Image (cartoon, rainbow, N blue to C red; front, side, top):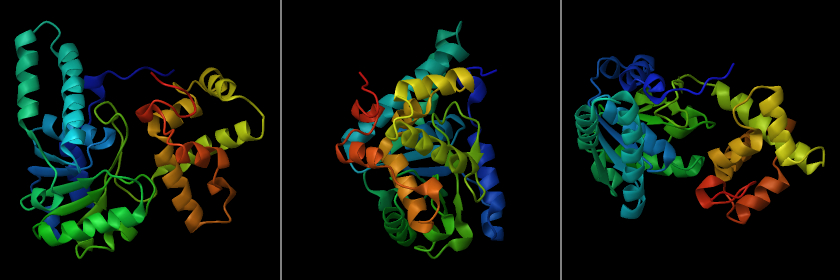
Length: 292
């Protein structure tokens, strides 16, 4: 039976996640590093969630994106999320809730200059667009600015870590740290090769689109079938809109380029059309469904 997770029970222990990452790296310097300062690149839902969890566990966090407007929206989202957590965690203690909120927010600062943000950081977690060349370009520039001891990690959900890391000189201090959305509620972090969840999940969502393209069912019927028949909390089209159609397209396009003969990775004309029209899901107000 599916049960809705409670935010304070499902909150990821960032200290555990960073311990797992450090443990997986080969250099003795990395294994014995103390992770105190974390730089998160990307102020979207994933980046903001990672920053929130890291700050909640006492880390000093710098959240980086390309504009102050994006960062303002990110910090507002973090504050709203923390208020909901505090309200439930300290239901009868409003003073404790306020103290918790201010303590966590105090740990977070923002920056629009990625190179300056990483100059004294221990860990960089990248959570930007799922595009290999863009990620390689970012890490190449950060590699020149960050201290030698700094560990790099990508939140990629589909791209080979070795390919991303090849743009840097710190292959022994580069790992994958794939969080799940919403980060403050989801316990799972993948820090091993394979990305098991998305390797199963993305082909499932793509097959749902193909069923709809072939006229085998409406998106509403397919979503309802999976919720009632399989017990899923969201149907595949609802999930696609939540994840972002552009993100799903980036993933499937990347896999298709690596294995063009694999039918599971075949592109979808319907998905491509929606992305080209800027209908990316909840974040733009429309995807497979319209959102208020």
